[in-house]
Image (cartoon, rainbow over all chains, first blue to last red; front, side, top):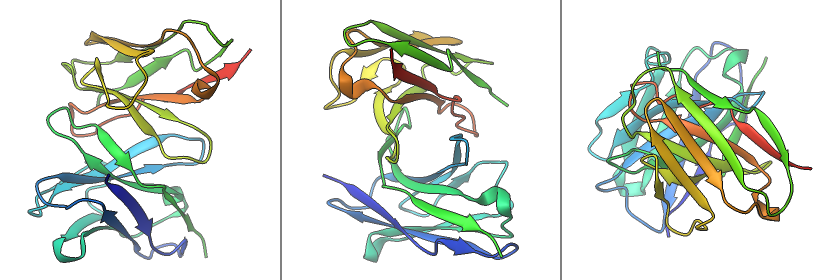
Length: 118
Length: 107
C-alpha cells in the first residue's frame, strides 16, 4: 500500500524559504495527483496545493504568490517550497495523494512540524 | 470564498450512541464533500468521500449523506476507537476549505 513521508528542516527563519519533500513508497507517482496540506496551531487545516505527475500544478489562491510545487518522478518524490515565511506559517505540514474525481486526500503522510523563528 | 461550518464544535457521547455531525457549505459544492477523522498526534484519515461513499477499510458504522448545502456524518454506534476530531472538506472550489472540526469526547 502507498505510504508517504515528509522530510525537511523543522526550523526556518522568518523571510526565508520553507522546503519540504514527500517520498512515496509502495506505489508510483505516475497517473496520480499529489498534494500538500498544513495544520496550523489551534488545529485548523489549510489546503496548500496539488499537482499531477506531469507537473501541472494547482495552488490555493491565498498562498499562490509564495508556493512552488514540483515533482521528481525518478525519485518518487514531490516537493513544496513556501517563500517569505513568517510566524504565521508555523504548522504541521502533510503531504497526501489526491484521488480523482471527488479529490479527497488519501492517504496522508505522518506530518512534519515546521517552526518559523529566528 | 466557500465557508464550511461544522456543528457542533464538540460533543460528549457514550459507547453505543448514535452520533451525527453536520457540515454546511456557504454555497453550492455539488457532491464534493469529504469527511476525515483525526486522532491526537496523527494525520487525518479519510472516512467518506463524494458526500456518501465509504472509503475502503472504514467500518460500516460510518455513513455520509446530503447534498449542498447540508451534509451529515453519522456514526451509528460509537465505539471506543471513534473518540476523535472529525473534519469535513469541500473539493469543489479552488480553496478546498476544511470545516473547523468537531471533537467527539467521552461522556
